[in-house]
Image (cartoon, rainbow, N blue to C red; front, side, top):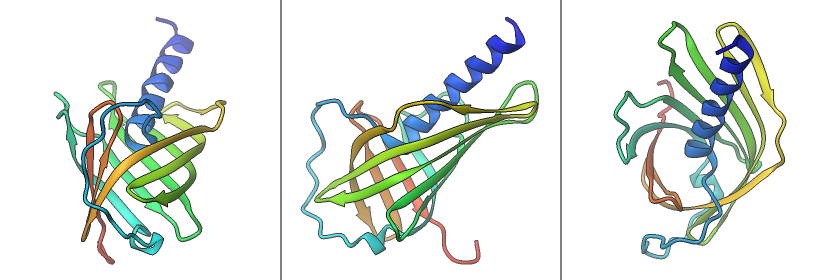
Length: 158
């Protein structure tokens, strides 16, 4: 495979990871029944780290950091080690809002960084929604494809 082909392949993988972790999809499928939640946006603000994902991947979980900001914006970074050395880093940002038990999100920019280059994905704004459950310092996201991601809030000083 040519170098350009490898770059596009890795960018594609990065975009899939970002979609998997950061935004969800807009397909109509059965969502889990979650007790009614009254949630204030400020309960989401902070730094979150992925600590569990189902179905559990056969490889190591990527390192995922998700920052939710008071102004309704989010930023994420996903790092996955490459067999050739270094990391594939995918950074994304967008906007979100909370409606009942849904996080409605828009992904505005995605950038994939390889040890040798940086590629910015030129895509349309992605809009999606994710069912969530917030319990103390755990944020569980239920994606429309049946997968589940559990994030833990980073405490100050960690």
